[in-house]
Length: 332
Image: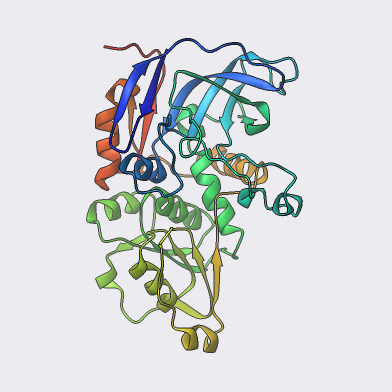
């Protein structure tokens, strides 16, 4: 069985490991179909995520099929599932209030516990959700990253005619632009990379510009998805009086003009991952709609044996989502 293994930062290899034992109790064994490479995967690879631990098997955007099940597992063999890669205890004060996404005892697959970039892996059936038959694999693999955006959009009201700015057109920014456009908003996407702007324009009628092209204009809702100090500070300046700013990116720090925020009654919302299963289910419904565009967002699907090239593509910043395929893979 093949798996990716990150011994230390920048030391990623594809290795052969023994087959896994049968799942027990509520566990299921999953045969992986696709795994998406996320920005956090790249941060762990580069050693830039402080809470990451090594060695670790990367991968948390995971789509697969159940091939074995424990006695008390919730799903049958043959069920296609998407994985929830963030555990929750269900008993801490935050979990009991419904904030399982910020559980005090959370572990994250591929970051501080082994992920799923492996031909097979075992996980509690508590952390998977079945996929509708009419949702094809190439769309279903986006459920986890798209659920992040679905959750972020629940912080604000976006509808037809809402003016929305998206700062940062990485994978999450492109998904945010696609959802805002789908909901009928007037969308402006901002990025410093012209190649990313070209991808965003392919989503639909979206104004895609560099920061320098922004004039003295403001927006009802601003989503910050670049995760830099300057982009967060720009987001505050781009919000209409009474406007909303949603911080999706993970900038370490930023300077806020408090008087400007107070006098203009701006609301700043932080958002992290998603509520499971609600945000996953909503993401599925959007993706089941064939009018929801994903083709510009998914740039490449590569066999896991091409993992070095796939990580290189993803890290370049010039592409959309890069996906590893684990279908019928053999070491070359």
